[in-house]
Each structure stands twice: as structure tokens, then as C-alpha cells.
Image (tube, rainbow, N blue to C red; front, side, top):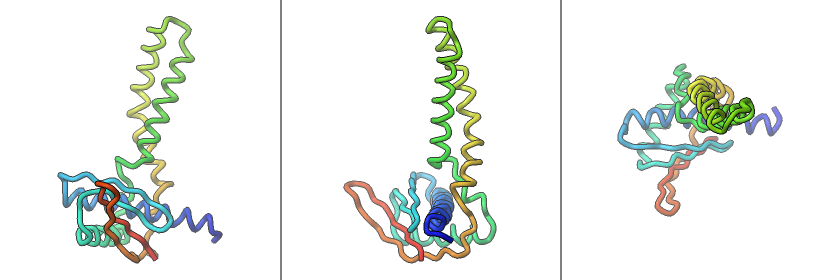
Length: 162
């Protein structure tokens, strides 16, 4: 496996573990919000929690993915879904603006209808794309460390893997 292929594979695995961890954290702390970012070395979670909570959530997420709960690798608030929705809405708006040669009100009406169709249609596409941006086969991933960090007023936890 070449270096680029390895970087992509690890990032996809970490992305899956990040999503699974956020699912676990959200179930345990439904009143809190969590955001994550994955890379070839691990992932970072932004949110109000301590290292012990994170260690437990990551461990449970890894075990559940390894036990076959592949759906945990997909998350409705993933950036892939948000990007897919933004792109679909933009393309629908552009198509509506170009397709109609009438007044600005007619163009606006067509653009609005196309955009209203594109937004809900993009959701399943975003989940489908997550199947390429995540990899739930994480049997070879082991946590190397979890570190609490503070950047300004933001608290984050960095999870790295061997």
C-alpha cells in the first residue's frame, strides 16, 4: 500500500470512529452538542466533556464498530451531508436562474421550487457519500492517546491511534 492510499484509509477509519464516538456521546449526554474532525492520525472532538468520558465513549464506539454496528459510522450531521446539501441547493438555484427566461419573479419561483426539491433529495445522497468517506472496518485501530486541550474558550479532546 502506498503512502497516499494509507493516509486515505486511516482517515476514513478515523472518520468512522469519530462518528461512532459522537453517537455514543450524544446518547449519554443528549443535552450537549459535539463536533468532530478526522485526519490520518486520529480525530478531535469539540464539546464539553472530560478525558474519562471520552476514553469510555471511544472504547465503546470501537467495540461496537468491531462487533458489526456499521451504521454508527454514518452520522446525519456529517460535513459530507452538509456539503452535499449546499452543493445540491446551489446547483438547483443556478439551474433555476438559467432555465427560465421570464421575469425575475418567475425565475425566483422556479429557483425556489428546484431548491426545495434538491435539499431533501440531497440527504440520502449525503449518507451514500459517507460510505466512501468512512470505513467501519476498524479492527486494526488502537487508541494511542487521548488529550484534553483548550483553544481560547473552546475545549477539545484529541484522540490519536497507533
